[in-house]
Length: 151
Image 1 (cartoon, one colour):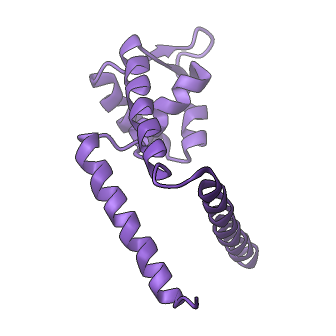
Image 2 (cartoon, rainbow, N blue to C red):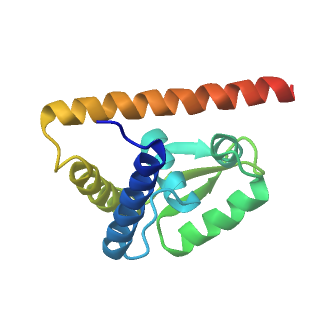
């Protein structure tokens, strides 16, 4: 059977849109890829980190991070503690509410991940994984080549 690559690509985009629509309807304003949730996930892993180091990990300016942290502070997800050695330095950590929010969102994400391959057999899931890995590797290689050309 000979497939038209345009049909395959269009089908991929259709599935992506359907997944996104389905996921959005259940998330109720939760976007695990947003800056706030990325920040919460990092804090959940590291427990306590300087504001400067967190900005570097998130690859955002310190002013943008301050804004993001203010929003998380208002939601009672984080606490900022001044350093004993340098009063200009603040350490960020999750509150109990922050830990609970991370758990809640991870549970939603795990359900979504399970649903992604629910219609596939174990063998099909393995094939899908190999295909996605191949596509990802291709784009990573392209990105690396573009970065090398820019240097």
